[in-house]
Image (cartoon, rainbow, N blue to C red; front, side):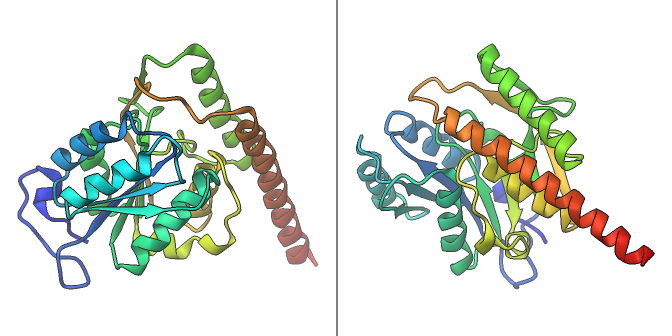
Length: 268
């Protein structure tokens, strides 16, 4: 699948995908009280990948983020807004965004935070990985070349610990399975059984990556620089951490039980 050179700035000629037209990219940005940071991330994103479309999925932010998003969309035809009734968590917001994008025939769907912790200028690296054959590209803090900037020690420990915990319990080979800067082919999302996803918080990222890995899809980790947000408030909470810990434990136990059952059937 080829992507237009305008999306990358890498100098390759524009090409068309399997559908006989230039590949369409949609970047989904969930928001809840991100009025301060949204204009900056949108400006940087539109400059970095000008031919891509943007979907702002707002969970009825009380600070007026949704109204601001409408203003941005009114001024730019490549920006769209999905107004959701209430705050439900990261997972439901992305699932709604994926459904919106797949219904409109986008070919590559991207996850990106609204707070500029995911640098829009690095999105072309993820799109390039998809063009080169990845079913899913993860912007990784924990592969060679990846790093974090200005992140509090506590957050670093939680992130590192969460990835190690997932690697042990799930047996995954993904270094940054909690990373939320990603690009998916539409065919990848259609293969993951999104209608069965129940994850609401940040374990949603673990859930989808592990589903892709178990399905045998090609996952590429691209080194990125993750920058601590300068404006707004982090959505990380104890409830989110507990959900991730319990869900990963449940998934790991279920996978081991399935493996054991298969071995017993073969022996029988």
